[in-house]
Length: 84
View 1: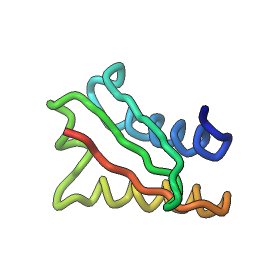
View 2: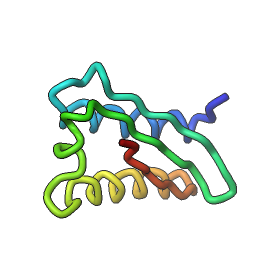
View 3: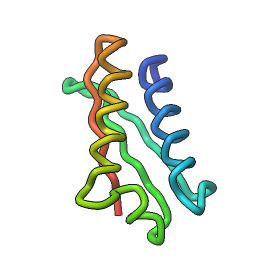
View 4: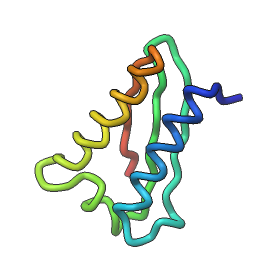
């Protein structure tokens, strides 16, 4: 069962990813709480991987920074893995 913190950060990740891709219906984010904090896995269509990662990983880095800031506000740590 997802905690409120987990659900908030997961929903934020999903909303941002859906805005970036051409196939928003294929965006899926899973969240799991561990001893390290909230661990998110982002799944997108193969054709949208470049949009999520960005040039030299800039978009992915920005997504991670925003999610970390949101989790930090709730006293948690957050990591985002983009799954191929």
